[in-house]
Length: 205
Image (cartoon, rainbow, N blue to C red; front, side, top):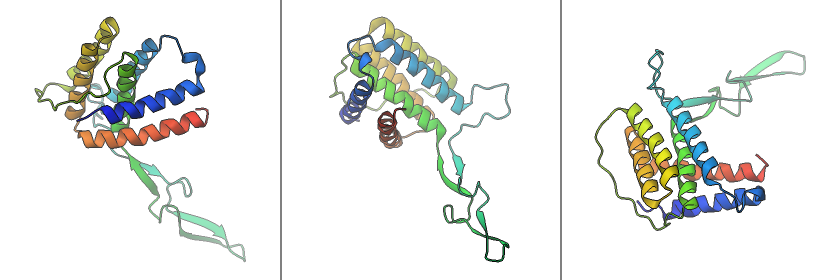
């Protein structure tokens, strides 16, 4: 995979954020980005749920259906007719299903992490022409892989080097494969979330 397009897209978002928050220019932005990545990684683990051994619900949150806000998930809407009788009909927004769309929270949190990993790469001048080769990985425990990514974050703060970023990205990429994501899925979700992030900046998020 060629990461050039992802880096270019992230650089545009980072610049948009700088325009909205000019106080960030010329200061150390690495530490808060590393902390933000740790938080997002924790949120990703929370949607995976596999570490929650105390719970009977350890299924990853990969499909969440959203209720229609027009009919509150009922699938029908009511109105009063000319003789004040309440009439019910199919909700036009959801076509009577009570639901509008679905999302994949686990994938969404994973690409939130990717946003910060790319931004951190830009912060330490990782080359935007990086071409990443696919990795074979040992089928280890996903919990251990999450810990490996977290450990790589700490190493990157210590060394602040291209190699430490590459190790972080590699651990993160392997985590994505272990969670069942293809890179095409990840890229598509990344670009969709990137649009949302731009819109948030434009609307004083």
